[in-house]
Image (cartoon, rainbow, N blue to C red):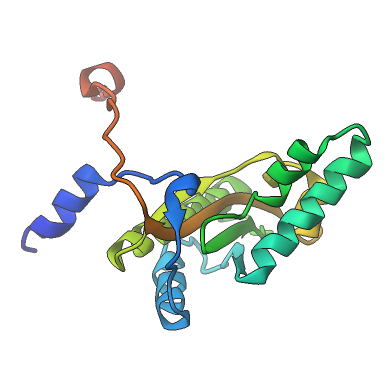
Length: 192
């Protein structure tokens, strides 16, 4: 197999772009379908498809934020308007957010940990797909991704949980690279 220089160079320089720097325009419906197709092309031991996706686009982004704000207000009546606004904007300004849900299937040959890793791969592949189509992405997981009631509000069913939210849009800035791990500090070679 020949070296794919463009892919190699992309992987060596890939960098998430924070949600605050993702604006319109987002992917068209055809581009989104391509992102979803690429995103779900991941290792999946046993062909279980142990994940589901929820797309937050258009007015649904603000509607999801309103529901999160209402949940937080019900839990904390003292929450002020600034706090409410933070919750309302959880899926803004990025034009599209894809929630990835772990939907585990009982299988003795593919334990839940493998299925979780497969779902995590979906998150990362969605990010790669967005970049491949000329957009930028940020994979996050905030409080609502760990809160059972919030997860249900956003589309998780019994026994499911979100593993991440991939925000996609047009980048409005160039993100500087960050320090990367020193391989000598993190890599060992097994010796027989």
